[in-house]
Image (tube, rainbow, N blue to C red; front, side):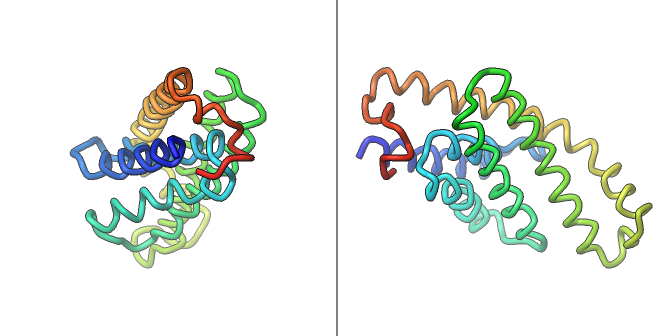
Length: 174
């Protein structure tokens, strides 16, 4: 039960943080997708970031191209599943950077492919789209690093005080 409450609290906090004023692309969802892959059972590892997005998007507003954003978080969840068996500071940093890059590549490809006017459907148009998005990548990477460090750190600390959190996520239901 403690694991379920802790997981729900993480989803709720991630969703709420998207509702508070913050710099563009400085959000916890990539961190939640990585966190879910490492610490939750496989089913919930993908549900956690999508649930946080759905809850917050309900209040922020749904938007065109959501499938690219949500899809990128599902893919980042797979990075988290890989990280589960390759834990360490270097691999966690690498997974965080990989998640940020994956989000950048997938979502901006979605902007380009969905664009009817802004970017021509040519190689030059795709490059133009990625170049225009570079200023947002800084916040994406910074936000992901801050939230991964916070989520993983808080969870590891909490495991010392809440024994149920130490159980193997592949054998425990959230």
